[in-house]
Image (tube, rainbow, N blue to C red; front, side, top):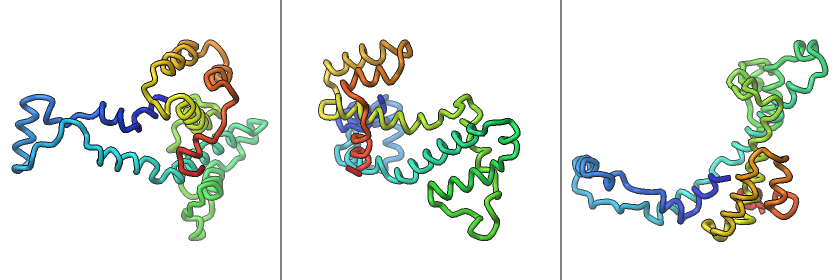
Length: 203
């Protein structure tokens, strides 16, 4: 949720500072390497902020398809009804087949090597890190945080009243009640995907 603020122009500006302004030593170091260039502004220029924000969603389609692949693979390997069924599951083939179906990315299978090539699942540390069929929460949290941010903060990121309401309604409650109850109370309604799609430029 809090990452949303790092993509607002006013906050990017307030968080920025050129290293040459931090101390006389840094300034001297910059001057030695600058070759006579004019000293840069203390804070990040507006044009650079605009360019950064423009790149925020570069490759988001691939990123989100990858998240879907991981989440669905995580659910798939936790679904077998017996120990025997999971022992008989070809994990690499399952991983690669889902990757192809979801992300539409070709692998060595298109060269006739079948779906058992490699062991991509071995690089997926979350699988055995205690998530237990909960990896989908990463993508879900992005949907919910976009809904919260667009509802309360998008038009006025530093709104003090909304900030206090977020603090009291969400942060102070923590895990003391069901998270969906907290989310619904903050939004004043059931969560929706509209803001997530809007953030990605799809709505």
